[in-house]
Image (cartoon, rainbow, N blue to C red):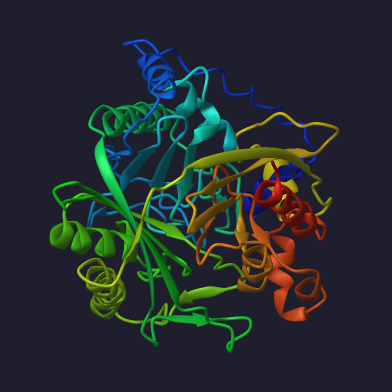
Length: 448
C-alpha cells in the first residue's frame, strides 16, 4: 500500500498547482522555402477572371516509435502493439481567386489551437485563418492531447502522453502536405450531395432515439472529370475498435477514405459531425477482436458505398461557385471543479494563453453558395448540431466538429439538467459553453 500513498501524495501535489507550469509553445520556425504561399495568394487575388482551382494531398502520420500511447477511452494497457493501418492527414485546397480555404482532416483524437497555430505558421504569415484543421476524433491513434499518459492506478494520468518529437515531426509533414495541395491545384468543378447512412451503424448512449443518419458530401473534380478530393461529413465517434484495441489505426474513417480513394481517385477527407453525448459505433467493447475488426470494415465500407454511389450519379454541381471564408475568436470560461480544469492543473494539456482566466476558441465559416460549412471547437451533441443547422439557409451544410481545437463536450442547457449527461457535464468547459459557441457561429453565418 505504500506505493499507493506515495502516488496519491504526488497527485495532490500536482493538483494543488505546485508541480510547476510548462512554458507556452514557442512560435514554429519559418518554412525553409519561404512564404511562397502568401505570394501565390497575392497573385491569385489580383486576377480579373480567375478559374476556380482545387488541389489535394495526403500524408502518412503514423508514429515511427514502438509502444506509442493510444488516445481514447481509459488508461489501462494503452501502448500500441503494432500498426493496423496508417494514421494520415488529408488536405483539400479550394481557390476562387479572391479567396481560398484549406481543409485539413487529421486521424487524431483532437488537436489543440496552439498546435493548429504552429502548423499555420509553417505555411503562411498573412492568411492563417483560411487554414481549417479538424480531427476525426480517432480513438486508435497517438495521444495528441496529453490525456493518456501513465496514470495513478490506471485512473488519473500523472504525465502527458504527448511525444514532443512526434508533434514536431507531424507539424512539418502536415504543413508540407498543405503546400503540396496548393502547388498541384488545377481548374476544378464542385459537386454537393447527401444520403442517409444505413441503420445499425451508430447508437446513442444517452438518448437512443436521437441518431442522425445524414451524410453530406463535397466533391472537387478536374475538367477531365477525375476526382481531386471528396469531403465526407457524418456524425459518429471513430471508435469501432473499442477500448480493448491495441493497434494503431484510423478506425472506420480510414476504411471509408481507403475505399473511396480506390473507387474515385483523389484524396478523401472525413470530418465528424455532432456526435457528442454520445453517438458511437453500434458494436460492443467486449466483442472479440475479429468481430470488432469486421465491424470497422462494415461501418467504413457502408459509408463508402453511399459516397461512391452519390459521386457516380447523384450529386448536384455547384455552378459558378462562390467562396467566402470568415473566422472568429471568442472567450470561453472554464468551470472550476471540472475535469478540464483538473487536466490543466496536472499539466497534461499543452499550456495555452488565457484571457481573464478564459480560453480563447475559434470558429470558422465557409460559404460555397449552395453549401455552407461551419467549424465547432469541440464535441456538440446532435441537439446542439440542430441548433447550429437552423442558422443555415443553403440546401447543403456541414458541421465540422473538433475544428481547430478539442474543448470537450458541448451540450444544450436542457441536457445540462438531464442526469444522463453527468459524464458530459464533467468533461465540459461549463454550462454556458453552448451559448458562447452558438453566438459566435450565428455571428459568422449572418455577419457581413
